[in-house]
Length: 131
Image (tube, rainbow, N blue to C red; front, side):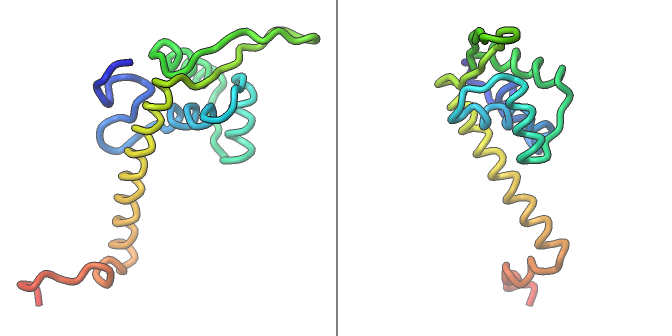
């Protein structure tokens, strides 16, 4: 795992995150081992996160190359074998970084909407020289 935040595909970008797919994939694998179709189905049905299957599978391959997830082939009695993904220790670290970055982003959005709705001044007293 590389140590530089924002340079690996599985880590949050600097500034405002533009693509949460990597974070979603990591968090979906936090407690469960899943195959790609299960991940896409759960994201769509439970969280309204829709992504092109090709994009999801490319992202999963990138996360695996970066060491954040690992996978194995699960043979089925019927149908083709499916690749099952699991979070690695490095992936847990990357997920913690995503969580921290997204928490900061959420805080910034909360401030934005407080200012937008006019409630910011009520929450933050004015400076003494502004009174």
